[in-house]
Image (cartoon, rainbow, N blue to C red; front, side, top):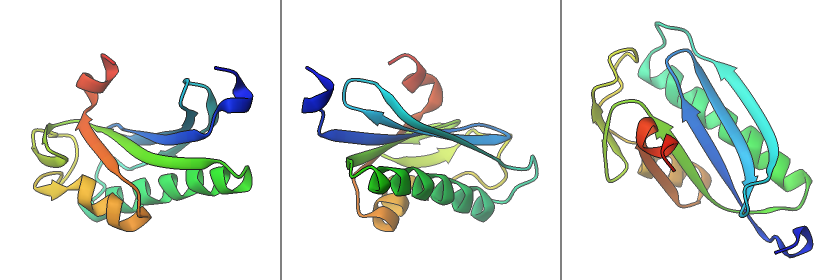
Length: 124
Protein backbone atom coordinates (compact mmCIF):
# COMPACT_ATOMS: atom_id res chain seq x y z
CA UNK A 1 0.00 0.00 0.00
CA UNK A 2 1.36 3.43 -0.88
CA UNK A 3 0.82 6.59 1.10
CA UNK A 4 -1.50 7.97 -1.58
CA UNK A 5 -3.96 5.15 -0.83
CA UNK A 6 -4.03 5.66 2.96
CA UNK A 7 -7.52 6.79 3.86
CA UNK A 8 -8.02 5.81 7.49
CA UNK A 9 -6.36 7.02 10.66
CA UNK A 10 -6.77 6.39 14.37
CA UNK A 11 -5.89 8.17 17.58
CA UNK A 12 -3.93 6.07 20.06
CA UNK A 13 -3.79 7.16 23.70
CA UNK A 14 -1.46 5.91 26.45
CA UNK A 15 -2.39 6.80 30.02
CA UNK A 16 0.50 6.68 32.46
CA UNK A 17 0.79 7.60 36.11
CA UNK A 18 2.09 11.11 35.42
CA UNK A 19 1.28 11.75 31.75
CA UNK A 20 -1.09 11.12 28.88
CA UNK A 21 0.40 10.57 25.43
CA UNK A 22 -1.44 10.47 22.13
CA UNK A 23 -0.60 9.87 18.50
CA UNK A 24 -2.47 10.22 15.25
CA UNK A 25 -1.50 7.13 13.26
CA UNK A 26 -2.17 5.91 9.74
CA UNK A 27 -3.54 2.44 9.06
CA UNK A 28 -0.02 1.27 8.15
CA UNK A 29 1.51 2.69 11.34
CA UNK A 30 2.91 6.03 10.20
CA UNK A 31 2.79 8.58 13.02
CA UNK A 32 1.33 11.85 11.76
CA UNK A 33 1.21 13.72 15.08
CA UNK A 34 2.38 13.07 18.66
CA UNK A 35 1.44 14.89 21.83
CA UNK A 36 1.92 14.58 25.58
CA UNK A 37 0.21 16.25 28.53
CA UNK A 38 1.16 15.93 32.21
CA UNK A 39 -1.21 14.78 34.91
CA UNK A 40 -0.35 15.41 38.51
CA UNK A 41 0.32 12.46 40.77
CA UNK A 42 -2.68 13.52 42.86
CA UNK A 43 -5.00 14.20 39.90
CA UNK A 44 -8.65 13.33 40.39
CA UNK A 45 -10.65 11.03 38.13
CA UNK A 46 -12.31 14.05 36.49
CA UNK A 47 -8.97 15.76 35.88
CA UNK A 48 -7.63 12.61 34.23
CA UNK A 49 -10.74 12.26 32.05
CA UNK A 50 -10.53 15.93 31.07
CA UNK A 51 -6.84 15.60 30.18
CA UNK A 52 -7.49 12.54 28.03
CA UNK A 53 -10.36 14.35 26.32
CA UNK A 54 -8.14 17.38 25.67
CA UNK A 55 -5.32 15.35 24.11
CA UNK A 56 -7.74 13.39 21.90
CA UNK A 57 -9.32 16.67 20.76
CA UNK A 58 -5.89 18.03 19.86
CA UNK A 59 -5.12 14.94 17.75
CA UNK A 60 -8.51 15.16 16.04
CA UNK A 61 -7.93 18.86 15.34
CA UNK A 62 -4.64 17.95 13.65
CA UNK A 63 -6.48 15.34 11.56
CA UNK A 64 -9.06 17.96 10.55
CA UNK A 65 -6.29 20.39 9.56
CA UNK A 66 -4.86 17.73 7.25
CA UNK A 67 -8.27 16.47 6.02
CA UNK A 68 -7.59 12.99 7.42
CA UNK A 69 -10.39 10.52 8.14
CA UNK A 70 -10.19 9.22 11.71
CA UNK A 71 -12.12 5.99 12.16
CA UNK A 72 -11.55 5.31 15.85
CA UNK A 73 -9.71 5.80 19.11
CA UNK A 74 -7.67 3.28 21.09
CA UNK A 75 -6.85 3.83 24.75
CA UNK A 76 -4.35 1.96 26.90
CA UNK A 77 -4.77 2.35 30.64
CA UNK A 78 -3.26 0.76 33.72
CA UNK A 79 -5.61 -1.43 35.69
CA UNK A 80 -8.18 -4.14 35.18
CA UNK A 81 -10.14 -3.54 31.98
CA UNK A 82 -13.07 -5.54 30.65
CA UNK A 83 -15.14 -4.53 27.62
CA UNK A 84 -14.00 -0.92 27.81
CA UNK A 85 -14.64 -0.50 31.53
CA UNK A 86 -11.83 0.13 34.02
CA UNK A 87 -12.66 -1.82 37.17
CA UNK A 88 -9.69 -0.80 39.32
CA UNK A 89 -6.17 -1.97 39.92
CA UNK A 90 -4.54 1.32 38.92
CA UNK A 91 -3.43 2.25 42.40
CA UNK A 92 -1.38 5.20 41.16
CA UNK A 93 -4.47 6.93 39.68
CA UNK A 94 -6.96 8.37 42.18
CA UNK A 95 -10.52 7.13 41.69
CA UNK A 96 -9.63 5.27 38.49
CA UNK A 97 -12.27 2.57 38.79
CA UNK A 98 -15.78 1.71 37.64
CA UNK A 99 -15.60 4.00 34.60
CA UNK A 100 -16.89 2.99 31.18
CA UNK A 101 -14.08 4.67 29.28
CA UNK A 102 -15.19 3.33 25.90
CA UNK A 103 -18.68 4.77 26.29
CA UNK A 104 -17.45 8.05 27.78
CA UNK A 105 -15.05 8.87 24.93
CA UNK A 106 -17.26 7.40 22.22
CA UNK A 107 -20.02 9.81 23.26
CA UNK A 108 -17.58 12.71 23.53
CA UNK A 109 -16.13 12.23 20.03
CA UNK A 110 -18.77 10.24 18.15
CA UNK A 111 -16.19 7.60 17.22
CA UNK A 112 -15.73 3.96 18.16
CA UNK A 113 -13.36 3.58 21.12
CA UNK A 114 -11.47 0.48 22.19
CA UNK A 115 -9.92 0.32 25.65
CA UNK A 116 -7.55 -2.28 27.09
CA UNK A 117 -4.90 -2.67 29.73
CA UNK A 118 -1.76 -0.83 28.66
CA UNK A 119 0.48 -3.88 29.14
CA UNK A 120 -1.77 -5.95 26.86
CA UNK A 121 -1.60 -3.27 24.19
CA UNK A 122 2.17 -2.99 24.43
CA UNK A 123 2.31 -6.60 23.27
CA UNK A 124 0.58 -5.67 20.03
